[in-house]
Length: 87
Image 1 (cartoon, rainbow, N blue to C red):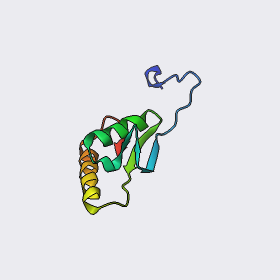
Image 2: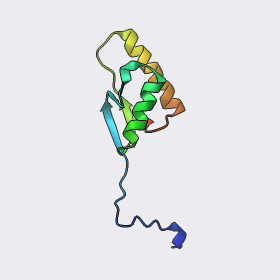
Image 3: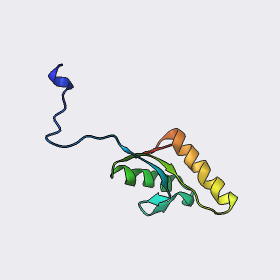
């Protein structure tokens, strides 16, 4: 093994990122806000605490509101966020 392949974590631990399978919001935003900014802010907020992927969860509301949120969720799942990945 070459030294360039070794990462000295100086006594710290390394673990896989968390996957949140049920999350309604974070950082002052909710998935039902139905905006790019809401989902992106949620993603940026939770990645700071070790969550690397998540499934944005909707609520029991009108089908129009759910569709609005799902369109944004799908868009950011495909294009990416500035934080945790949308699953």
